[in-house]
Length: 118
Length: 111
Image 1 (cartoon, rainbow over the protein chains, first blue to last red):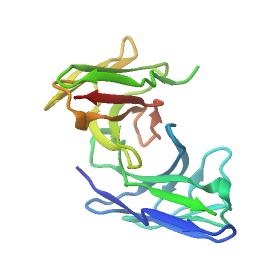
Image 2 (image 1 turned 120 degrees about the horizontal axis):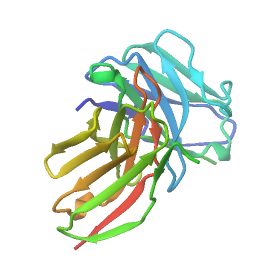
Image 3 (image 1 turned 180 degrees about the horizontal axis):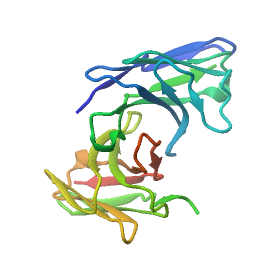
């Protein structure tokens, strides 16, 4: 199956700093990538949809100025958590949509990034 | 009412058992159905992808879709301890629409 990588896998930072997370589709081009957040023992919560070459679409309640998304190429999307605070500590997962599948709706997920803000 | 309902479990079965995981949904626009497996602290891994009613088999896994009842299932035969994970159902209306996930079922296969 298609492979999506995510970097870093784990990051610890001080409150007030910014953290950038990269998501790459390794063996296919992804015009659309998604960013999710997951709290312990809960399902995935979609934060935003990232479209290559255009602005991201944020879900209701997600602060676009806090969670900056850039999708500059067909294989790379980045999520920057600006001025991070302890409540931003979470597991962040990206996915990439493989348009080669029927309906083009299969999403392949990265391994996730665990963010801890002290 | 949630668009997708999934029993959170936990579900505990002995090794070798047949496992049945289920989701129901209310949105008749959903056309594409997926099952993901997620190990603790890892990203979800795509197991099965279907876009029509009926059965689809892949090794020990069988996905079943009944659109008339708005009900999907994942069967795992000869379950192994390595199958212990959380299983998420997901579905979409197609055309690039975002996925709607179930809450996930936690499965534990015991020796």
